[in-house]
Image (cartoon, rainbow, N blue to C red; front, top):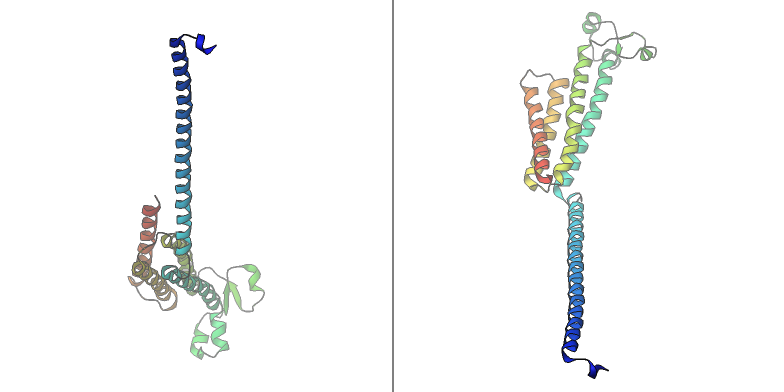
Amino acid sequence: YISHIPPFVRVIVSDAIQCCISQVKVQRYIRLFVESTYLNRRLKFVELNNYKMLKTYELIDLSNSVFSTFIVCSAILVLKMLAMSTLTSIQRFRMQLLKWFGCAGENEIHNSNPVESTFSAPEDVVFSKGSEINFNNENIERVRRAHRNDMENILPYLTIGLMFVLTDPLPWLAKTCFIVATLARILHSFVYAVYVIPQPARAICFFVQWLITIYFAIASIAHFI
């Protein structure tokens, strides 16, 4: 029957079949190209995420000297904050402790306030004779102000310090900042509540650590933005 079909019809049908086959091949090639492109992008995305995760694990590993320095300095600052609570309690029982350990002379005992301990909560007074409720004791309030200043500055510093570690900073710069900030906070509490030194000693210690915290915040924003 094919021999009876006119030649021009056979040519048209053959061309149409070849055209359909070509379109199918083109569509298949396009689909393969799109799928391969998507897979390549997906693989690159996964590889990038894996790299970032590995990099993060390396940064928060104790083998990283920057992170280990941050951990040590943070632990020291936390212990210092806890020590301020202890110092507040010592100041509340200051006169009583001086009498117990024989550190107060007769003139100091007779000339000082007869109150031996000071509390801020009424329920605490019943546990100690010769005590009172007083919010104006300068020895106690000075330590409490120093403790409050610690909480207002050290807690944000610890948070932003960890973020700064994740920016992969220069080791010498990061470790220097951590050590200087820690020493500044220790000196701040010392000149504020332990051995009072006139200004600007306290202000210098405060602004040194404060400026380092600001630098950590700006560096973290610039890195992750």
